[in-house]
Image (cartoon, rainbow, N blue to C red; front, side, top):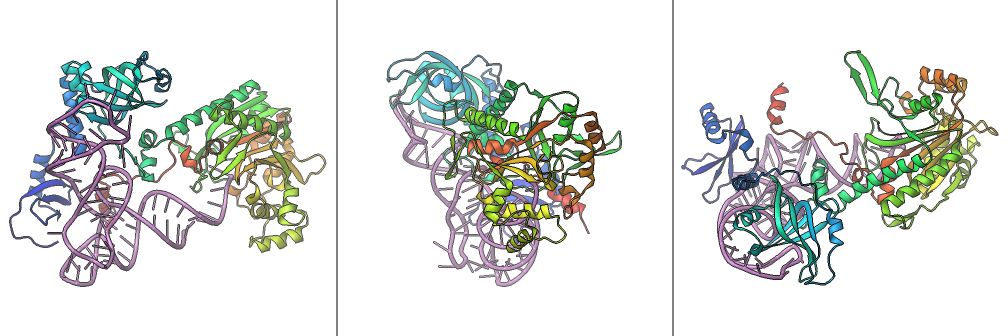
Length: 556
RNA sequence: GAGGGUGUAGCUCAGCCGGUAGAGCAACGGACUUUUAAUCCGUAGGUCCCGGGUUCGAAUCCCGGCGCCCUCACCA
């Protein structure tokens, strides 16, 4: 900063305890930052800048303008925050009532929604109103309103929420329009909306302020509503098959049922360390022991791992268990769940060939079923039981083999050689047993577990077993930690109560887990898990004013 | 965790070789009774992510940091 000896006419922009920001309106001058203002200057600034009521302090000039209009609405005797208005129609339904020819007048309608666009032609105004079903144009003519009502109409801002009464008709240029006869003000928006044509593009803004994304990015709200319909259809599919829903604990003493790092937490009164669950499996199986023969849970699980296009630290899983079934029953059920989900997302008569980026997915059942060992032979080029040959292939792909259990190496080679080719949907069946400590072995071959995973374009969507119900084998498998796997990377975590439950007797059963978020991704052509989760995990937003606390707190 | 990209007005984006920060939309004031991202006239709006450095002079160059995005590696 250069010293300035001439007097300047300056205006206060803002101040912190460390700096004052002044704007100068003579030429060539920008904003000045004055470090460490003397205390008396700070005091003066505080006096002149702090309004009487903090709620009236506008965040910016846009908010100030809107607060002025809010006061003007109040001056008209109206409530800027609105009242009950639930006797209205969905815009999507109203659009269908529109007469086909311009000049004809359709039925009277009443809708409510947010103002998305405004087109002001003086005594004639057009608005676009959006609700969660659709958008529609409003036409408002000064001739149809009292002086008072017109004052309100002139106060409307983009983003405000209003209710309108009117008639549906086509405009002269052929757009479905409501000719408005009455406006009911419902909610003042104090925030400046994004650019009307380009919308908001900044990913961070869209993720942190998902409400903005839902309002202003085409397709986002629709996709999330579709998510809800898909989950409804999953419940419906299971209800038709006599499954019941259960809610099991999220706080676990042992984070079992999957190979993943858990989040830890603490219960104060009991002074007890707890984990957030990483799977639903072990509790639901206890319920089967208890006689709940067909049970499922759609629930959040938490895995303390990385974040990317297909992983969020908390995600939604369905796990279901069917007594007296096996993994074959689970394949049939998986197909039904996915086909019904696709119909819920795209309509009962829509094609089951869904778009996936520039590719497609054909969900017409039955899905292909391929044995793990056969796929291995086909893509790795050797038998998975031929350990020398497997080691050879592993070397070729630079897979670390030292100290690893042979089945772990087989699985590494499988992931490297086979999985990229699984465009699917394909059920990969019959896994090496050592990878599956919760799965029943094949009667004909104890080295093979009755497990399948469903792959679609490299995405693992479902995982199912014929459930292991032999308590002594289960206990052995819990004890046998696979070489080369850290404890948190293994599914084999000793859970004594679970073994105790199996000793009571769990019927033979099929169990299935589906990653709901990934299923939604596939059914809605969404390439990122963030597109199908309302609020994906983000780093903390740096709080305003945190600067000083942080700097002073870490003084060295 | 590694590499690449990016951060400028409320939003979408320009800003070249270092030389007084720009546009469109939105806002504010005005005109306009069938507009489609309406149009026209006018006004205001900036901690150029943060911190250092080089320089007479930095949005621009250099160093460090932070956020976000993409690719790769790990988990579903």
